[in-house]
Image 1: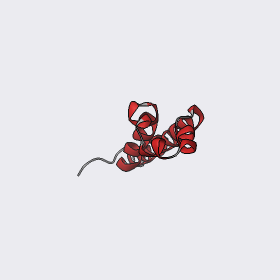
Image 2: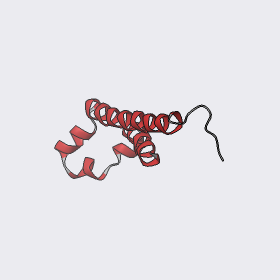
Image 3: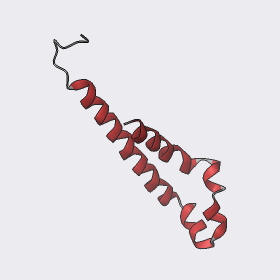
Length: 74
C-alpha cells in the first residue's frame, strides 16, 4: 500500500518538474525527447500516478473499514 502511494505521488509530480526535462532519454534521442516533453505524455504518466494513488487509498479504506463497530484493540 505504501509502495502504491509513493510511486503514485512520484508519477504525479515528477513529469511536471525540471528533473523531467533533464532526463537521460531526452538528450539521447530527438524523437524520444519530443515524446517525453509532450504535455500529452506527461498527462498520461500523471494519470497512471493518480490510478496508483486511488488504488492505495482504496486499500487503506478496506483496511480500516473492514472492522466491526465493536471490535477494538484487545
